[in-house]
Image 1 (tube, helix red, strand yellow):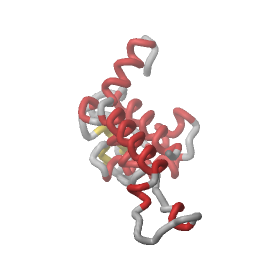
Image 2 (spheres, rainbow, N blue to C red; image 1 turned 135 degrees about the horizontal axis):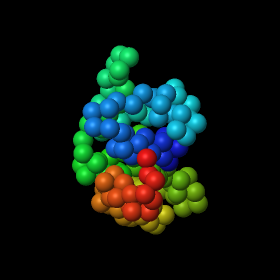
Image 3 (spheres, helix red, strand yellow; image 1 turned 135 degrees about the vertical axis):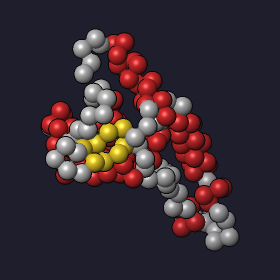
Image 4 (cartoon, rainbow, N blue to C red; image 1 turned 180 degrees about the vertical axis):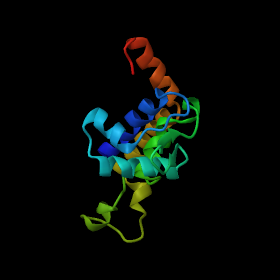
Length: 147
């Protein structure tokens, strides 16, 4: 997973702490963690394309949350940044190895592929079950100084 996922999650939380209706520029969000503005902007644009953020151009523009935190899962953010593809891609390496056969679908027959797919399903289910509201509530409980 790329660092863009972490940056996107933190940016969404920072937008949640903004005043209602306030847009935050990419530069302001990037400055909070000393991130490269251009690269963070790519992540924020991906979140906007996914309907997680809205983007307003102009001098008073910037980014805002497009949905309530309760409606944004961790999986939504991961998918917006990384895409919907599988994390593990079986290249059917066994086909090229000793005893490999052209008529076998090793994506289904390979024990490693099966184990990785099962783990990914659990991981995706966990991410889909946690919202940004859950994360924010935990942070708010842990620190009264949360921005």
